[in-house]
Length: 472
Image 1 (cartoon, rainbow, N blue to C red):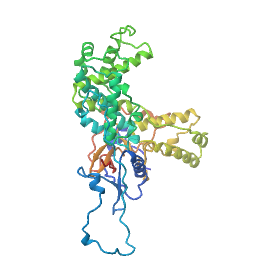
Image 2 (cartoon, rainbow, N blue to C red; image 1 turned 45 degrees about the vertical axis):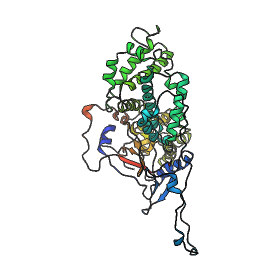
Image 3 (spheres, rainbow, N blue to C red; image 1 turned 90 degrees about the vertical axis):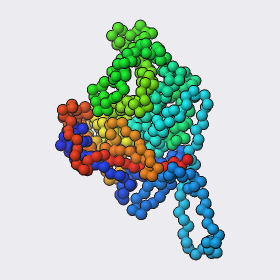
Image 4 (cartoon, one colour; image 1 turned 30 degrees about the vertical axis):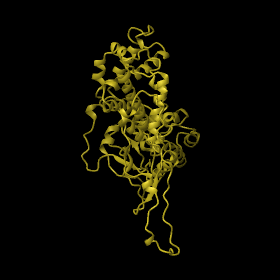
């Protein structure tokens, strides 16, 4: 395992070591591919895939061209009787059979949603790819769910343009939400996208926010200030030195307090229930922004704002760690038994999902803190040479995929399949919570401390290609 980092800050190492690779599953690197491949075939009820073996000894998922159809791909080959031999030679092997699974169903629409979903077709298609059936569970918290939430906000903006209301009533929200998810699933998205992202039709209703119409909103909020702050959101600065977020919060408090005397004159919240109202009003603010901005501007802004929130948490689940505590307790734990137990536990974390580099830092800190509370006093990360990459999905070559902290999308191509970008240059030691390395590892470095952009021809990101197609 490569160790160390000349620059202690996260940005320094990431910018210093980047490389680019088009992954085609080389020999000896089947583990990560097999996980994704298995998920592709586990989701066969929602799509279909055809497996081909290449001469190089690698495997890929065949992707049909846009003009291909199931009948073209799998219909019987028509051969003239004149060229068919009267008797086949003995012991001739039969041709290989390609698996074929039922195609995704056509969307079943309620016919009661007043918005033409095709008006936001580009956003819907992007969401379907980002939430593609075999990858959604691996990329949900970082790519799929942020994009799904952004699509719903953009849909609200389109609804307000036609009705003058920034939210939907409960009945219309259920119908439109059902239509949207049906269209997504028919386009290859995961069938459990709603439960996976914990997003319901009620997200479109504005909840308890007292301001719901376009006219009332513009009479209450400083819309010029809101547009100035949020039309163009800087992805490098917003999470550390926010510009748009505080203006959205200010607008939400104004909406929440318009018909309420419970908020004090300085807009301070006095109870948890008031925070719920403000959070509901933030959704109304997003709907208004979606109406004012074009689809790309709105989607970029919403994805950046969501990434700021996503990268503050660790999405991994930490189950029973008693085996690690037992093997690593004491002032001088035995290296072999302790590290073996720790590596076995981290292996279970690696099977959960792909995470960003900043999420890996949060997970390493959280896990270390949990171990400290259980009596572990030794820096296990240094003892056992644990890197940040060890907290994300791995391949058999010990190459963990850390996704970039900036918003990214899954890319689908009919010929190359599905791909997404990993930031595999972060060979950074995982910082133990009570060590000095944690305080020196900053995710919000000052502008003056940012390193120069890399100039090496080998610098860059790794682009992971997963070839899995849905034949419709």
